[in-house]
Length: 309
Image (cartoon, rainbow, N blue to C red):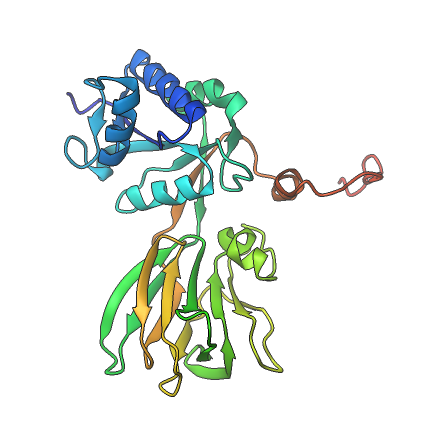
């Protein structure tokens, strides 16, 4: 292969017939356009068992490095897109999500527009939008960093035992805010504000607003409101040493670490964003209405020319 070869990652699970067929069409279209499709090793194994030989398809890591990827096409829902974000984390490739799931909030388009999307990828007819991510560290009782990871949607401290509450103290910018017993605490990005944060009653934050949301889960406290912090803020959640329940850290529901009493989770903005490929102007209000099927009947809209210069 020459240095001019275009490497495009395809991320898809072979769990559903329509996803397998979509993967076949995308792989064929990329090969037909002279690009070299790339699959992660586990996807290659799964899809190869259904599609047969994939001799012209490269394997990520073995044949092509993440820094050689031009773009990632993701066939699936939000969970698959989060997995793709993991795969390209050490590179700069943007992610184009084609929704094969249900809500698919992170996906750019629906499956009916897949062929046109691949054509536009080949033509490089897309823009790139950067999304804020979180850097997450866990310290033990000796203040030693024992675990480091990141999150696109959210970092969540949860109780490990169903029977008992987790006792924590929340700190903002190195100052204690409140101590309470709870089921957990969600720290979310604007991208994650429509995920776990949304289910927990947290605010929906427009992607153009850089902020960090903090939402207690079933807290036993007079002050246990959702907070919206500046993106430069640092949030720490300590599992109190007096608690009888251990905790667990989850990031994007994919990466976890046990939190014994005394553990301290520190969350701040990461310098490395996730890049999303966009084919259309991103009108977030329209996305909310479409994905959540919000009722807008009776809307008259602004008067013609109102607000125009």
